[in-house]
Image (cartoon, rainbow, N blue to C red; front, side):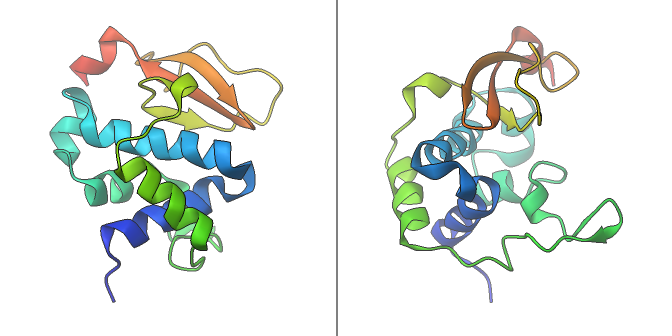
Length: 147
């Protein structure tokens, strides 16, 4: 059974940020929608403004991978059905809302440390903007447009 875009969005929010509370999930939802609406660079070229393509783009979200490090991934969007809060946050983001302190961030990750690196991804196309919970968020630099 194929999931609707809303269902897929709710599932990625639960899997990627379910333990980060409402603010953390809204921050991740903001990044996902920023990728949908970005006017240039890799996400526009590859995903063409399509939410489903953003979520399922290769090597973007661990929760879409069936294996991690050669072992089965027990935490996937297929194995973890969303709850009402995940649908509510998906609807919030689909309605055009954004978490203000995440800005135009296109990336986030958990560094498993107390500090966030100044750039991410490692090619320098993102610059640190904010930390929300355990995740560091990054706005695109001019280099991103060339990706």
